[in-house]
Amino acid sequence: MGINLRSPLFIVLLTIVIDRLGESLIFPILPFFVERFNFDALSLTLLFSAFAAAQFMAAPLLGALSDCWGRRPVLLICIAGTALSYILFAVATVPWLLFVSRVIDGLTGGVVSTAQAYIADTSAPADRAKNFGLTGAAFGIGFIFGPAIGGSLAAIDLKLPIWFAAALALANVVLAYFILPESLPATQRSPLTLKGFALQQQWLTLFNQRTLQALLMAFFIFNFAFAGFTSIFVLFLKRQLSWGPAQAGIIFVIIGVVSTIVQAGLIRSLIPRFGEQRLSWGGLLLVALALLGIAAVPSVGSLSVPLLYGCVVGLAFGVGIMLPSLRGVISNRVRDQDQGKIIGASQSLQSVAGIAGPAWAGWVFDRWGGVAPAWQSSVMMVIALGFLALGLGKPQNTPPSTV
Image (cartoon, rainbow, N blue to C red; front, top):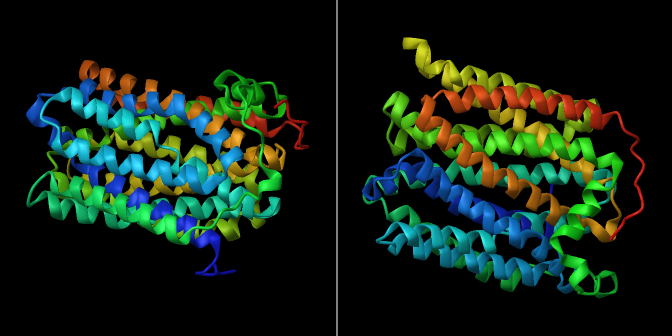
């Protein structure tokens, strides 16, 4: 079934596309942009950790505020913060300003989590996994066009992609303000209390539910390994294969194409046929194999580029079928009125992985070389498979909320 172009679902997905497009403009050029600051691998990845640390603190607060105020005002605040962070990044002349920029982006980095709460508001329980898949497709569209545009602009000046990303974020603010309606009726909003958005309270809400514990462990380990690997991936291409921004951008275009095909089309037919649980498990297994293949790329000579492309396709396909399926499983195990808190707290859990994962990958890269983060991430994915299998064996009834 197609999407009505005038529906709120389409508008919020378009907001995600613009947000992801801006991010993907910058990602492939980062190792080249920070060369003038003499960054090593760990310094580069700490930029990702700084963003994640700020997001860790802010995400549960933003989730609770979206349950109280509604999704629309929180989205507007987050998009405006993203625009400000890009501008600051572009004008930075000393390293600490780069980190301040990433912190601002992290503090207002609730676009995706708030958008997911928006989708939960407007979707029937049976349709949530499919519509979360469309969120992934919005990511994919951003990754199709963003790296290609960013690579082209970087050939003129490395700052141009950053300024263009800032302009997109400002346009996104205008679009959301005038077009996006509110999804959470006033009668369904939660009162704003310190207990309602306390970080520790939302974590207890998650981990006190036995049906979620093993699933969340798998979710955390996956994000730790994946955040670490992706933070170092462009530097891996630069050091191991001597690629530049344009060549690295091609990789992310491939990721975007595969993600869009899988999550905009295939996932909506795969879920009814195979179920969310099987797709979660199979997708994670494919990610583990793809990372192992990427670790072997520098050692296969003339086959390195074909192997890399094949592994990237497998990686994107695996993530594309696993993440929306697992999010659908988790979402359907909590009450409707707690979707914002659960998604916000889940985002904070992902941020914890995003703090430690890149720092770990940068340290490993500097100490043991460029392939080490890839094969170690593969091992972690196998460990996550064990927790996922355990969690999927738990009963699927929705437990009462502790919020």
